[in-house]
Length: 256
Ligand code: SF4
Image: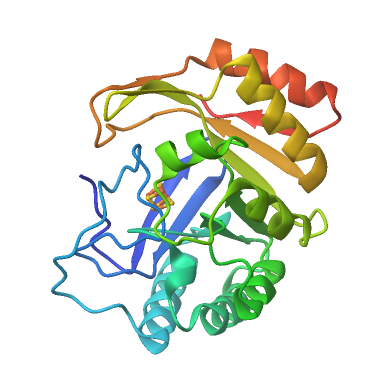
């Protein structure tokens, strides 16, 4: 289990994103999410929580102090990324925090992008939809276009969640979104899981054609997943799937 122990973490050097400063809107000692993905690097959802969810003011003050320090040291972040110990849009003040972050970015590092990594489960809430439309990189999870697989992989907590619901919600962004998909195979509770089969890829690409994201990001396991029976998909294999996405006219990237 890997938890972020701070509100602001990093900066982390990433080949893809450059210098990335992370923001964690969840408690520093627990993982809270509206999914419970079998591959989550933070582990499974936790019920034990001693530290509180950070307030809007704490996030703004901590981020401002970090940006002031970085700028003074001549370190300008390329991106400010909302990720952390769970789903960032669960924070009650998510939209206000995004507004504060954009204002701080404009003051201290106007060239930096603001990115949010979200699991898409709360995009139907008007304030979340508005907030995600304000950021530069609205990165939304969509792991499979087949319900059984999505439920096995992501283990959604809410009953309203199914693939058709996701597609309808994601279409509303009118292309202002980046789809992120985890590929893997293995076993979950003795059930076989593989979202790289022809049937899976065909259904997924057909969903992408309806959603029309501006970019598609594909990846596989990196750090250790909480379930030992999962298998990483090689970059070569991901590239074969990416070719099919690219052939449909999408901007697609594979994280190696
Ligand atoms: S959506 Fe993200 S944080 Fe939530 S369980 Fe899945 S991988 Fe973990």
